[in-house]
Length: 370
Image (cartoon, rainbow, N blue to C red; front, side, top):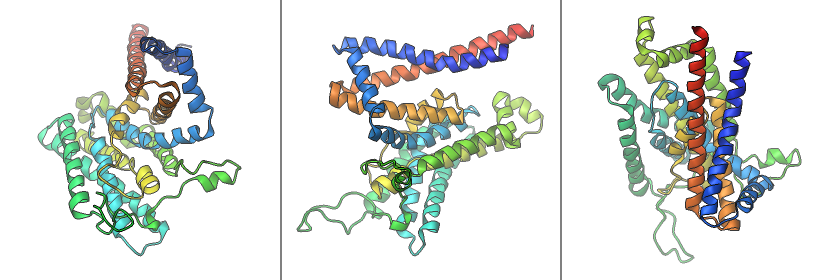
């Protein structure tokens, strides 16, 4: 009975937190002179009342699934991998290199090779702070933040000076300067959308929505991470090290090796985050490649309490708010800054609610043990 009560509380907590966030957000909406009922109604109708919005939410959520999972697996070991931002950028860059310069392969080999290159790029960039952590005890927050800027600078240099597509021109008379981007990916390296698959079941996805198979891969990665964490000897070592590194070492667990492995897994998953945009939407990488997914992934992991499946729900919530924000700006004339405030209130409410729930359950179990 007591265990059932705890489960019920864990289910109810995020719902109560969301209701509390809606209440606070309503006060913000009133403060800017808008009708809360109109604003919330517009948000729901635009996000959930249109088929194109549903698929747009899924597309927008796809990168956040990977960055949320990458952050979550590191947080489970109390490692603050703030470098997911740089790792997914480096993964996308390595994928672009393979997609552009590796020729003569059929799609069934080339596309998986591009995906592996993305994982390798993210993993390699995560290996640097891992080594600094275990060899020199450099705190991962400092090293990963600094490596984000190093990754951005390196990628910009290579795109703008080394691998820039010099064959492109602007204008009908071939005048102007080339865009600062790499050449287009080869067709064999591009990922198809899911439009054809859904059309078999009579569901037509608008052509301007580039929903692709990376979302399915993200769900598969979440399943794999869940199995690794809860069903494997390595997962037991991870959980033991997270709970008490000293006791884990005394029991024969190499905590430093566990730390390195978790960093590498986190980096490999992060490397996949940019592929949805790279392989389907853009088809090339430029200096304006989407940024910010890594930092949003931290919030996604916190919303999901570092659980792989809950991280997917957190990513969907972000996608919902992002898509709904477009509707609020266009239809309700709500400023973008207010949308950022509403998003922040939502995140803080859920995180604080989870922390209060954790403390309550811990206190109750101590009393039961006495």
